[in-house]
Image (cartoon, rainbow, N blue to C red; front, side, top):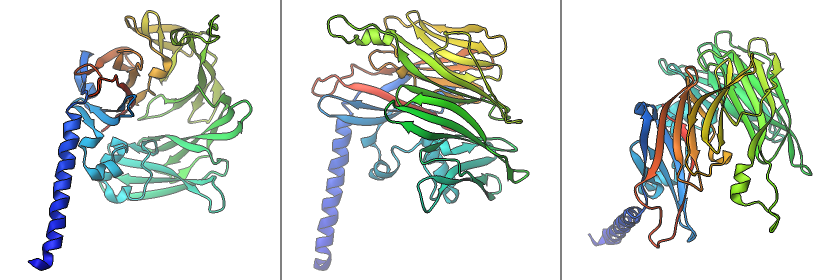
Length: 413
């Protein structure tokens, strides 16, 4: 027994330390604000698979990341030590894929933009880099048949890509896959402008071949305040894509006393300047410009094959607009009042398209308007509205007000 006494003592000390650590962690989180998603109207089942990541911080350098689902709030310190150091900041979609398909997922990029799933397939796309420089040399596509576990690989040459190239979207359908890559050609550091193209790659499973990439030039866009969005008419049977570029700009007069506008003045003066809207015919490869004959747009959130959908905010509240590309007419389809709110266009997270549904997260950093909005792009109607609410006043144990920010949202299968 004496032989193992030191090992026994060490084990006991470790167990006590871990117990104290976890008890202390839970005592701390008991004082934290908990959030919940309260359904205001619509089908509550639509948020069944919504996952929102956020964090709380204060002037005392308190920083607490958390995850919010329909079941409530989970703080990082409430998870296991292993999850904290390896999995906590990983996409929930990627976590599920790793759990269900360990062999296929081994060694792969953990960026969720690199994956697409259908009922029968998982499709993954990533770059293969040259040994002699940092530019991507090829696009590698791997597929896994969920039913047979058969794995296939295809490699596409892409010498036209530069160091700053990013896979933005993978769209898998029955016959093949499209991979959309944002490619930075040049940066002018004096003007802070970037020259950007979107390269659309297509691989067809049945033929085992790929087409020449469709290159969509967006011209020069600013490094800051920029907006780039990418939409497809139907992810199950894609025929057209829309690529947009622009920026959030300001038309605010300077304050006579300070020379700077107030925060409220700056937010009220925000507007969306769309510098390029391109429609891509995926069958022919033709790229055409869309020239909107209206300034009534806002943040682009979707495309239904006929209309571009936008969300705009003004003094009266939020408004979803549909812009018909053929008739060039704008129709307001949904209006939501926001009483006494200061809402910036920066408060909208990137929209998520899940089939015919478009999810929008509104995170008003300087107000109480934190909402999830879901519209049906085909029927053009609001199908869900929910508020994100705290269980009590947002302040920490020392009475300092805490800043809460909801960083991103995802839809998990």
